[in-house]
Length: 488
Image (tube, rainbow, N blue to C red; front, side, top):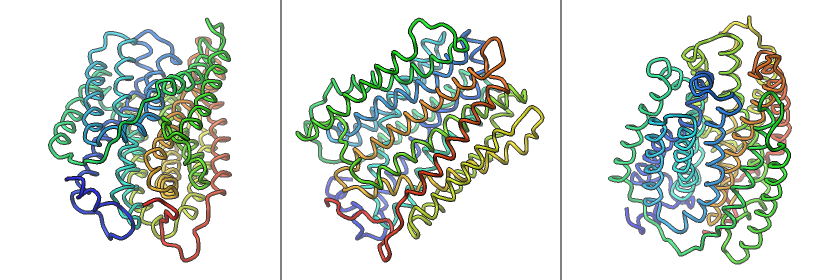
């Protein structure tokens, strides 16, 4: 598809449907992103076996998940720059090439260090795919169809990590942890080959300078805070080489400087990450809720629950993976129906009940114990996934739909960054809380520690519900969704 054809597909609200060429390109992006994001949580059920096989602590091995998310959080802010400097085709090919290389490195890793390096390379490839996918949808799909299309994307960014433990449990039982990467590698190579042949989305580019200092500030900021949070739980809260508050403080200062620098550079149109989307109230409310939502999804559903099943109920990785499958299916099945409801009624009627269901399920998790029937655990998890499914599509579409089109790429980068940071922070915080609350002398999470972590998750659920009350009401007589005031 040439540039002129792309211009004709822009979703300015005048077209009834996206043309078939745009649909094919979005399908390629969705399929590729699904394979890549599956890796965020595919190792979650293997944390226990990896702890023993690699000879590292639980609070160290969880870096295979939180390090993946952190790397994405560091790289994603650069995607605003990348989407202006390079064509979507170039970014797509580079993304899948990096991901495939990281997958191969992980599969061949002789120890924890190389395995973590492979995960970091995987994450570099995954990071640029997410904002490109959301930005492409906002530019190609007509306004009236965005909710339904975003529902499909929900299947990618929510269901893939939700069913990651299921896939991981099955592969771990049959092939060991290396099999998780050998299974994914041919899928990523197939997506790379197919995209190279069919991905023809062009676009205008411009020579935008990369502010290296901003990239370094972002890495130090997010990395310092996450490292500090994770190290609190090392050795059950014992002595550390560096006091945890030091990297947290350094990270916080770096993030403040990063924000100040972006505000200065964006006046010259040179910002690594344009922060003007944060001046739009609907975007900010949806952004905060998305951060809390991803903490629930990635930290609680994908990390704490498998840990509970394996350490408290003594379930095998395969059983714990299968236990979260029904919830993952619920989340996937809700994607497009919820998107269509958003197109008709807006976000508020969906988000508030979804947040309520999420809060209730979080507190129900605090009642779990060694004798809790597995069916009840599965049922509570399904309620959680249903609540998250009612919120995810409306929040993404509401956030980006409130922005003018020239801020789509930066808005999607901000949202994707915060989602991954929230998931990484949530993973570190909840594993730390579970380790600090344990009665196990080794510091490994047990029933007492996990109960404490679930109580903290319950508080998080209440905060999510309160925040949902600030989602704006649809304007009477306004078309859904609306992106008024944009530059077209």
